[in-house]
Length: 165
Image (cartoon, rainbow, N blue to C red; front, side, top):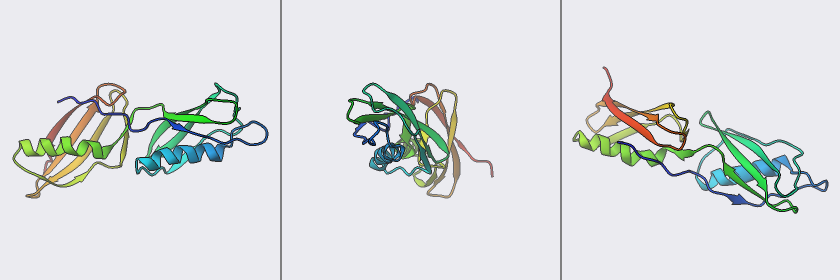
């Protein structure tokens, strides 16, 4: 089965600047946190460069670390007054969006999911990357759900196999 997952984040407006027409890195980082908050995602760290120009058309990159994975954001100034739009450069998605797919896989075996551990709340889609979830059914049987990204946008192939005991 192959599914393409939707991008996690959308564009977010507004970024204030200082008196010298430079972006305040702390405010840029707050903008990225606001976007993540809308998706109930906690970042361990967010960094944006200091001293970027507020001139329309200027863009720079910020990085958030989520569940150990780096998620890159492009911040672009849309006017000369310090208004900006931020968007993720990487295709990211919450692991929770895979839960129905994993539950369907277990149901195909005649079982239901009792416990699911996908080792974090966010994945970054990179072609060839492999991600896993530990699955336990209602009878206590354990499985390993493994997905490999087939592109950089969230398309993937997957398999569900019983864990060796």
